[in-house]
Image 1 (cartoon, rainbow, N blue to C red):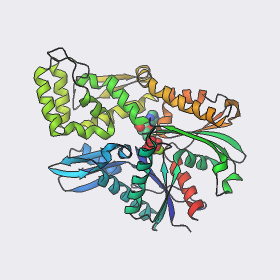
Image 2 (image 1 turned 60 degrees about the horizontal axis):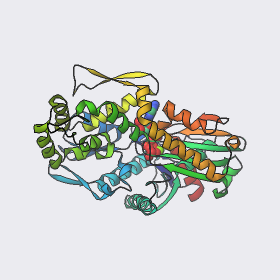
Image 3 (image 1 turned 120 degrees about the horizontal axis):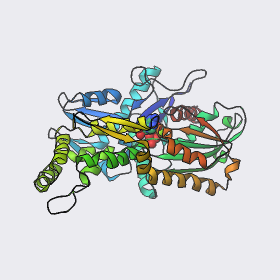
Image 4 (image 1 turned 90 degrees about the horizontal axis):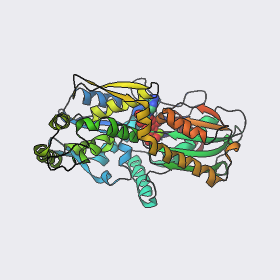
Length: 416
Ligand SMILES: Nc1ncnc2c1ncn2[C@@H]1O[C@H](COP(=O)(O)OP(=O)(O)OP(=O)(O)O)[C@@H](O)[C@H]1O
Ligand SMILES: [Mg+2]
C-alpha cells in the first residue's frame, strides 16, 4: 500500500487523508477529531508550542504568548518573511508555519501507524489574485516547507478538483458538476465531468473544463462583519479633537485574522498613546486600549466569527463581549451582515459566471452543483452561487472533509 497521503492545509482547518479500500479516508488529528484547526500558539511562559483546539484553549486561558491563525494567508504575502515578538524573543512566521505542517504530518502518521513520504497538497486556484509570480512563490514556499518537514515527494492539486474526486466516489453515472469550495481564505470553483468510469483514469485533464478562484473567504466575512458592527464600538469612525478621523489601521489589523498581532507592536502602542490624548470618544478608546493590553484581539475575532456562524441559522444573534463591555450585549443581524458582505458576494458570483463563460458552458448544461467549505453555509452566498446554475441539483458535501478525502484519492492514484 502507498505511503502517500493528501494534505488539505486550510486557512481555518486542516485535514490529512489516506486512501484505503473500505475505510474512511480522513485521519484523526486531535483526539478523535478529523480536523486540526490551523492555529499555533507559542506559549512564552514555558516555551512550548500548541496546535489546533489546544492552541486556542491555551490562548483563551490567558497564558502569555502568541497566537497565529490564518497562517495560510501569509503564503504569498510580504509578511511570510516577517516575525512576531513575544517577551523580547523573535518568532518567524515561516517557522511557525513549518511547525504546524510538521505537526499535521506527525499526527497523521501516528493515527495511520505508518510514515508518509509522499504527499499531494491541496492548493487554492490562486494563492494570490492577479500576480502569477507571487502565486508561484506561495506554492514554492509551501513545497519547501513540506520537504523540510520530511515529505520526500510533493505534488499539488487544486482544492476544487480534489473536492470533485470526493464527490465522484459517490455517484453512479456521468454528471457535469460545478464544484463550489468556499473556505476561510478563498472561494474556488471547478467545472468537471465526473463518472465512475472516468474515476479510473490517471490523467484527468480532459475532464476538467475550467477552474477559477478568488481570494475571498470566511475570514473576509469576519473582517467585514467586525468593521461594520464591532469596531465602531472601539472607536472606528470616531473623531479626534482636531476633527480628523481616528486612524483606521488599528481596526483593520484587529479585524484581519493574520494581522492581529501587528496591533501589539511597540510602535502601535505609542501611536495609540498619542491618539488617546486627542480623542473625544474616550469610552470607546478605553475599550480599544483594554483589548490591546489584554492581547485579546483573537478573542474578539473568535466572538465575531461565532456570531457570523450563528447568523447562518438565525435572523439575529447577541454577542456577549464580557471582557470589553460586561454590562451590554451587541446585536448582530442577518440583513446587516448580508449588506456588509455584499461586495464580496458579488465578486464571488462574478468568478462563477466568468468560469461558465470561459468554459463555453450554458447554465442548463450543468447537472449538479456540489458545495463544500465552511463558508458555503452562508445563506446569501449559497443562494447567489446556486442562481448561476438554477436547474442544477444541489448537493452538499462534507463541508470540512471533502478536500482532504479527495486529495487522499489523488495521492493513491498518483503515487500508487
Ligand atoms: N455554519 C457556518 N456559517 C458560515 N460560515 C461558517 C460556518 N461554519 C464554518 N464557517 C466558516 O468557514 C470557514 C472555514 O471553512 P473551511 O474549514 O472550509 O476553510 P479552510 O479550508 O480552512 O480555508 P481555505 O480552503 O480557504 O484555505 C471559516 O471562516 C468559518 O468561520
Ligand atoms: Mg479549504
